[in-house]
Image (cartoon, rainbow, N blue to C red; front, side, top):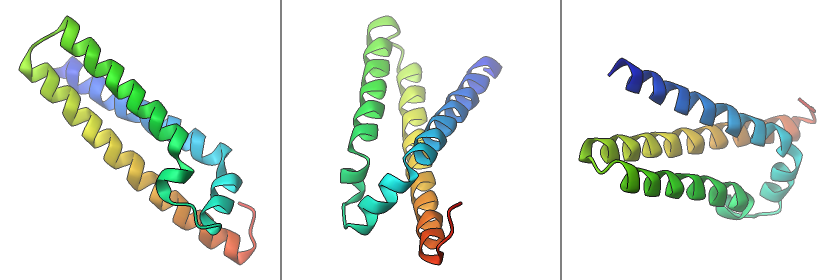
Length: 107
């Protein structure tokens, strides 16, 4: 159980840093797209596709290699937590980026 808990924390931490890298590397592009009126899904279409593909392949792997209900439930719970964290991070980052851009700051 300790290993599963450690795995879950590492999984979420890795996802957090991947999203942080994506947000900082595409900061200006996403800000311009937001100001031009693109929707959330239009701005992050590629990232949503990549994460959905990763989640789908993980689900297929679990279904093929380990058919226990507890494993599937744990994986789906991790995916839902991951999606929630990603969404909240992106919204928070966009709000602060927009406020800084309107003030005329670079950082």
